[in-house]
Length: 455
Image (spheres, helix red, strand yellow):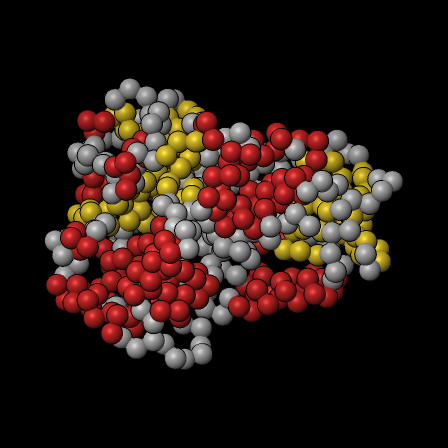
């Protein structure tokens, strides 16, 4: 039997977007439920506490880029447990000639760096004088960078960056959809450099300038979904298997689900908010017309990714690990995409005289590596870490995490998927899609995607 009074909303998925949608509905005084198939909240946000190490299986940090996130964490009571990244984490490395080179972080550093050649520096100086793009086609990020800068910047800046953020390929990703901030600098100001300067001046003039910071929490990233879940526990149902979702009439949806104890339930709601990854989205038991329309989302690429959490004795690593981590460009022909210096990021992430490294393998660059068994894969990783960081011997801690369908790729032509979401919402009143398929893949974007669902 359904609840006597229809709910205002049902949220499908208790990842970070779904949990934040629930939080927004709670604050607005709405009647709602969040349904989650698994036994835990947070989706890929999960923290490991093992053998004196703290590792993240998914996102390692949150880049706080606006005061709204500060307010949000304070509302949750997380302000006191929030930790900012160590100052040295501002330092990043990109590998060139199999040597980790520090990324220039100031205009002065740019002209003394060993990462880029003088020719590349010249292209940077001439960037403000290059014509603004006047075409209509959805341009790849690689074409965008070659046009405004040059191939060297693509190889040694953008390619490794894309490997670190999307585990993707800049030749395939859309500049407009994968990196809208960069795309809009040219669209608004005609230049990346002029745009960066102009945007900073605008924000300072309007009092909206905000100095970004990199944060986590004392117990790790999982503290965020855990806190959101605990504060709305009466509204979240775990271990649920949705068996049907159908429209009862113009203003009412009906959802049936089975709980892990075998009990069957029905909920009626005025709104269905879908906050789940593509694989779960395609499996939802909507009516046939909606299921057919959802079929297009099976085309969105999700390259596989393996994360290896490795612990070493400190004296087994020659590199000082004085930064966030390192990224490896495709042109370096190595096996790993990059490595986060996990124990350097935040205090208390390793015990004693030991260090932790989070290494990423596969992605769009080398998907076949994800099929290797752990010992074979570890052998490749150890060889790369020996060359790049002077790592010797075997790690004292190893944990492998597989993501068979890791990060949705905002490829050239991604607008057709966004349009399909809009068309479905227009054709079926009360249906809403949120999360990383729609509003961006970063944790802040997923948070905001959920917090916008208060009505």
